Image 1: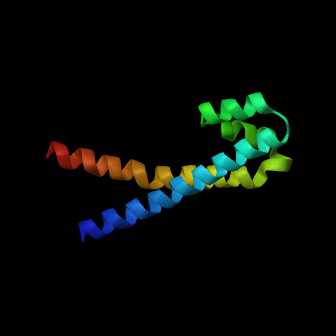
Image 2: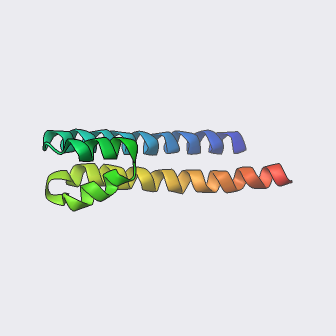
Image 3: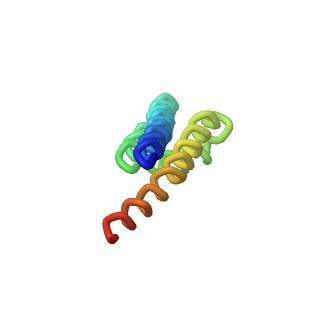
Length: 92
């Protein structure tokens, strides 16, 4: 039973990671398309800046912002409990 839950949590976490990654790439392309090449490079190098940029340009980037936030939420909901479970199993 534990293996099934772990595999399901990993699959859900992978969906969150993929959703965040797609939103991040779309934000980079949007910044480069608006001739903000420096901001595109900064977003590429410093990943969390994509969330700030998407909120700053909400009218043009609401799809990217939603992808980033939902992906981040899904990752946190699955990865944090998995880490807690894993760390308790190592200690025991």
